[in-house]
Amino acid sequence: MAALALLLAGLALAFYWVPDAPLEGFRQRIFYIHVPVALTAYACFGWAAWKALRLLSTRDQRYDLESYTAVHIGLIFGILTLVTGSIWARTSWGVWWSWGERQLVLFLVLFLFYSAYFMLRYSVEPGPRRASMSAVYTLFGVVLIPVSFLAIRLAEGLIHPVVFDRDVGSNLAGSQLLTFVVCLGGTLALAAALYGNELVGKRVDERLRELREALE
Amino acid sequence: MIRARGLGRSFGRKRVLRDLDLEVGERDLLLVTGANGSGKSTLLALCAGLLAPTAGELEVVVERGRIGYLAHEPLVYRELTALENLDLYGRLYRVPERRERIGMLLERFGLWDARRRPVSSFSRGMQQRLALCRTLLHEPDLLLLDEPYAGLDEAGAELLDAELRSLAGKRALLLATHDPARVASLASGRLALP
Amino acid sequence: MSYLADVGTLARKDLLLELRSRDTLPAMLLFVVSTLVVFNFSLPAGSADLAAYGLLWVAIVFTAILGLTRAFAAEREQRVLDALVLAPCDRSAIWLGKAIAVTAFLVLAEAVALPAFALFFEPVSWELVAAVALADVGLAAVGTLLAAMAAASRARELLLPLLFLPLVIPVVVGGVGASVGDDPGRYLGFLALYDLIFAILSWASFEYVVTE
Image 1: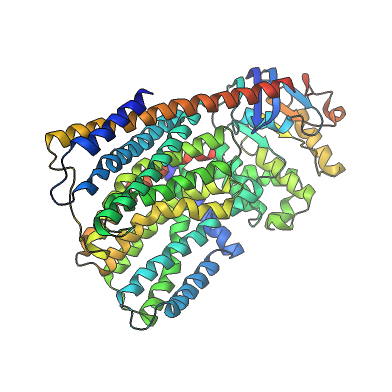
Image 2: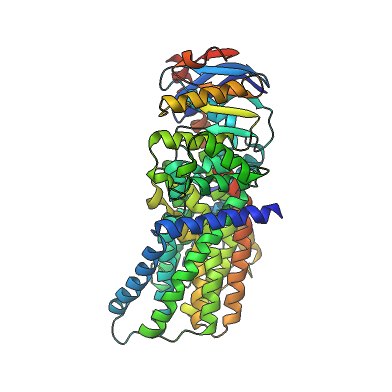
């Protein structure tokens, strides 16, 4: 609930308080959703990798569920990033997709990567082996993020000449920064709430299954 | 050498072993009996460290590489010859005086003349003999034998009898079989899986 | 020292297996040349010469996938990996031996593919050769680890490309950059960095893929 309140407050600030950006006007406001959502997705993937590392070092199976849930939430926010990014591209440049937008391209790669993670989980029997394989793949993901980012920067100059190169985060006015921080807090809190919720649900499922088996 | 408390293992939703207590000393030969699907192979794979328990505790006190593991499959490369397979394992398992040891085992299990033939041309019985050579190659401290008599003809079975007689009382052995009569006299204990 | 001896033993075993069964390398050679021929027809007349270089990299990545799907076939069919894992050698030696064999197959496949590319399409520069060599190391390092994962799954051949492609997009970027970019050195450096990072990661994590 608190997470939703924070997010709504951020959105209200974004729509009613922040003055229109000089060049882009009203459209630029999607920035306050798009960027926090993207950062939250990174945070989820990072959290998943941390849990994966814990799993590999302790072989304690409960980290598997935590890591999996974090990837799950991360992927949801990743898809949201793609959607909001696409809307941004549409409002700014009149196209639904732009290969010139680094963050968007990176999230497409990550979307493919973490979708493959789900494929991996679905095609391996649940158990310790699946847990450690998933953990290894999750660690690859967190290393892939900076490497891909570097690759996309390198590719930009090469394949797709940079037309729209603007660093939005660099010069924010006070009101903009505050709104941005509130929005970021809101999405992070929302992700944390979803994570906790999902984790409880999955644990209950698992307990129920165990109990059912014990009765058989 | 092996100590298990409340040991359990499931594969997905299927629970294969549950709540098993077990104790095997350094010179024990434990017969593991039970119907198909009762978890004999799973228990051996757990003791080998190839599988991790999903419940309970399992402690196996043995040095890395000092386990001899005989599975359903012979665990050899079909395209390589008997000699090449044993040479590969001899190197990886750091067997001293590898050539002599391999020659001796091939001789003992009647595979010497077939040593340069690829395993894919072997009969089931010959493959089992080769698998026994592979298992015994590094003179392991703990032997985990899953249906060691499977596929062997009478001559092969007698060779294995002699081998087990010489090992019983010197090494730790876990022997899974659904025909316990053959080795009952050597066994120091028996575990019947439900 | 015994570590390198183990790696040598395992890599030699893989090369010997391929020499006996001949089911991977000939398939890779035929595949990469067929792909180049298909590209001839998929490039419309008048398309930029540079496009051919891009397609060469697609061919290289897909040939690698073809080889990798077979990488653990012999181990999987007979569960040989169980016996290898129980050996006293370091588990990462299994990965390194296999990765060396995969690299050797890739290098041999490209020893045919690059001259064929020069014959059919565009000249091959030294930078391109260096990029291909660097890319082979990275593809084999990541691919061998993922092939071990895919071999333990139900989907197997189907799963490997899905796991593999998102991870090797940076290799394609580096490779294409080194073939057509103004400053190939930068892209070669990037490929070397990729190799280093992912080789270390795969080397360190292989043990967790083959044990519980």
